[in-house]
Length: 226
Ligand SMILES: [Zn+2]
Image (tube, rainbow, N blue to C red; front, side):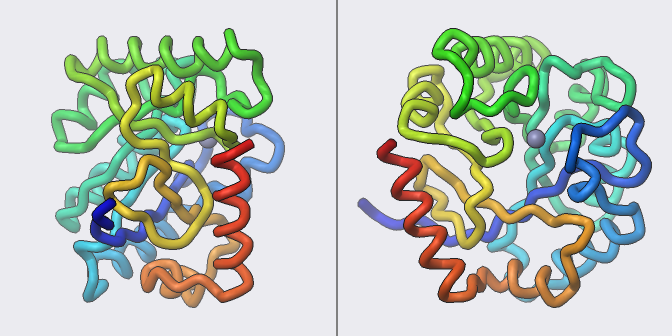
């Protein structure tokens, strides 16, 4: 198999003040608008900017109100993974908001329906998560939705098989490190509230500490087969 280009994918969640009650532990993934602008500047100024890719999970309203204009200002694009069970709810994107992101040149993918652990739900629930979210988003976007982001980064061979069967071509995980553009599973690194500038620079360089790289390689192969 030919290897594709190695990309580094940075993943964001909410920015600014949440417009809904957060799930337990979710606050660790929210960053301030100032912090977001500072990380985006590092990305926009990076010498290998073309090898950096950005995603946003959960379909928070801040995707449109804060992230989109800041991305546009810097000539950056991104992929937004929406939870269809939250569409139109307080603090989350509505149908029109998703349309606005598309009109602004952004890409839309599925994060499922109800933010469930896909490796832990029943076969029927997994089908619903993958198929229903895809259908809802395709209706809004008016085009095929082929990418999904796996909630909590938890997956196994059954989840990957179900994603493929549902027609997805790319599954974004949270395994860290570089991403091969021809691979089905696409590792990302989340920018958290406690992610320092030094850590951001390491992520942008695609640098993983040897111990972390070994853990990632083992974890990704285990998750693929079991
Ligand atoms: Zn999520």
